[in-house]
Length: 443
Image 1 (cartoon, rainbow, N blue to C red):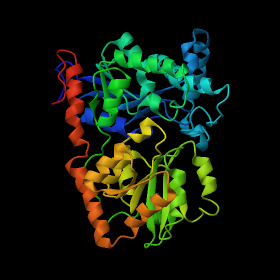
Image 2: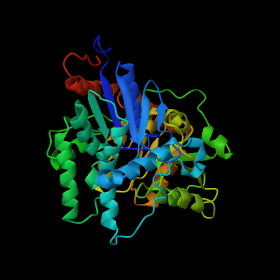
Image 3: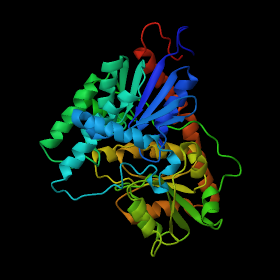
Image 4: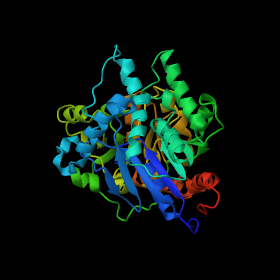
């Protein structure tokens, strides 16, 4: 599966993230390396993170996402500032600053700052990141951009360096929590900007069929190809790992209900915390990072959550399945607050299947079909702590044989259908179509 005799095919992944926990990008990059591509991943730089990392056969390069880069008079100042900051050893930054973003995130009410904060997030910071990439980028045959934040960079890279572009729309961006509540006509302008950039991309991908149908309508594009956010086939070791109980010093009889992922609003974290209080035989363990980390750390340190809800730091993507396999159930009570949430099929759903762990999932159109057809868990009303508690109880208090059968159904679904190998045919088919003549793609 190598490229042409002169050189291998080149692909650049534009991950508009910090490049720490972007499991989808890392899976694609590793698969592309295995298929003979020369791979580079570009991410956002933040203090405490290395500007360049060597990963599994590819390099990860970070650039700042500062909107000042788009202003000629400010660009030189910003460039000088970031070059000095990025030259500092990662170890010289305070531990709390690593991955902390551009500073501690502050949530403001819907006041006169509201529009500026949203426009800064999209499109200004993405446009600044696109310009900052000029200092580090190398030519590529394919530019694969993640999230709407990559759209300005996709257009700029193709204009300056050639190649073909892919917009990987992993959300219904303008129907997500950050933008769904913005009023007209301002949101119309931002929707127009996303749609214009999406039209300029050579291909659009997304993560599930409902999203593909919605994006076809909202972006007015041909229906996107679907590459689901599945994990590699994996078989839990025997006996099962027990890392969570060991880390927290929990008794073997204590049920472990895991939430893993971004610690932010509208993911059902607060509702799941209330629910676990009604399930005396189990505890809730939160594993992740995000805007609510400090708030949650304070909440779990005192009643009524002390000893019932625990907070652990995030784990690297390569270690996540073994930690997930240590749980008795994985909860994802995502709230039905936006169209994006209603049709989501979060990565953690497929991670729970890959680890052979039953799920407690929101009874919403995106997840309900998969959970129902596989029998891999129990659906709940995510707005009702009582419904979440009942679903948790039905798993952790079930007879051992029933719990084992549910684990086996989850694992079988991952091995038979919902796995990364099943997605590679679509992904590499798109890559082959976009590669230039004379460069041989993956087979």
